Image (cartoon, helix red, strand yellow):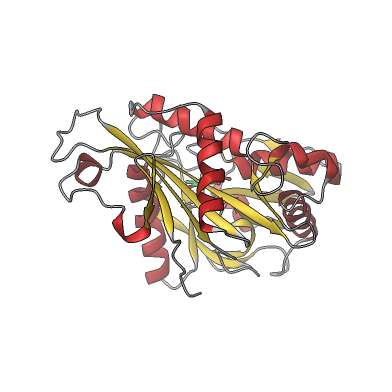
Length: 313
Ligand code: PMP
């Protein structure tokens, strides 16, 4: 897919042309990866001529938790971030599906390892359709272990954590797979490099608990609620063994970027019959309907950008 750049970013509190949002090459953020971030989505509803941002309050609560965990101070009021997200989308006049990245980073020029200030915020909204292969992915269990809470807490959405994700996905691609599943240091299933994981076994919809080395995904939480409310299925949160992946009936990744992406095989073991499972499909439809404003019970998840604005739900 051709990448299209926005006209403006929000950078250090100002609307700045895309090419001018620069930091120094020796900033602490570059030297020591001192950045926390959020990735979220905006969905365009053509009939209503409205763009809906998905679960902003939850994303900015998680951002504030990430800042607290890794000791990067910065604005932590969800309402301020929500206003800024609406501002940057309107400034770019986007009327299509978007990915929005919000970064808070230590902006010290040639800063030291223990610098905690000054911090800056950057918000970028960019056009984005599908992120992963829509029809499904073939994945490998990575030989890299997932980072864990005693060293590099996965609960914080910190840029440094994605070194672990990158090792896994680059290795998987070299080995001929689309993507990877990471196990905890104890050998239980954690998640994908940038997505949580669900599987169906003996008709039960299962996902690892949030204490198993995963990011506390907002899509994961949304699917747990949609499974209950729309499919009448209670998700079981319990540790998952690697060998269970080989005998699962259905499996999928989920995340703001990945949405609901079916997993077709793991280590070349077919998942179910090798196609997209029924529960996976129904959840995917329910999730995208909710994100586009078509599920009345879920409109509270959405921030409309053009009609009512940041505070108008
Ligand atoms: N795990 C990781 C490591 C991620 O990077 C993401 C994407 N933010 C997720 C899970 C899914 O989280 P969310 O549904 O909040 O996007």
